[in-house]
Length: 384
Image (cartoon, rainbow, N blue to C red; front, side, top):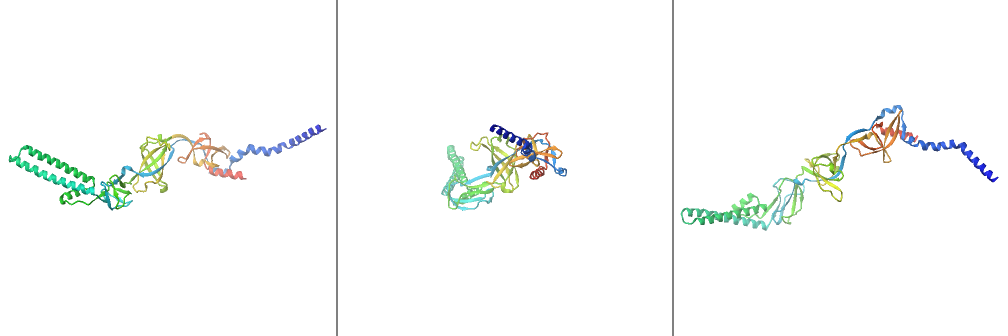
């Protein structure tokens, strides 16, 4: 009896489940099967179709723009480092940082015992040369009067040549110490020893460095002033080694300076390093940018946009893409005002186009314009 009851009970339970099985299972199973379609598909009203444009993905020649972190620098071919020609003490300063100077303009004045000794050496050499010239001239007169031998004349002329050579050497020494030709002429004419000499700019430009104060003792090896022509500057960046092969000297690039807003500058690549930085695995690239208004300041941060070589790519317009939960989607046109949202893998935007990496083929019909409005309709339908 117990066995019969159990079987009967099982039969009754099975019968009950059988009677309501189809109705009970339908609500549970139907949403599972139709959920992707309900979530991702939408049928729009005929009056909304005018806001939608259907087309196909396109194959185009696409050139990527490589963004390279960069920095503005001084054009080193337009930069001079200026120091003292002689060991001495700075007694006057004539310029400040940021001053504009012309070539030959005085930057500072320096006094030096070495300068005094060089002037005295020049005066002695000048005096010896004058005496040697007079001695050689008298020797010629005496030779004409048959008073001295030809050997004596030759000896005095030889002494004159040596004296002139010593004078030129003394003059060159003064020039090396910063004494100009006019001052040397005045030295010979008046015999007045200059107590100091100026340090002059060797080219026109902006004073971008001044590492000296009044009273400081300086050496010839010390670089105390920096003068640069900032009418053109360098922008230097580090390109990843994987794409360095596409960067060539003479190539034009676009330079963006965040500090200057939306203003972009055209640059010309003038150097690509032949070595790779082993720490960053990058190759240094240098560009030259014209800077007539001096908006670009050394050490400004920049972004260098380098256009890659063009290649055929399947693309969709940016207006065809909607994004949700960090995924990109496009809508497939299925006819009868019905559209299906499908996930795709896309590359970074290039000229308002998104390269298709995965999920679409060229013959598929998609919404190329109005995907945003269509996605809003889909979300409203999902809420209902």
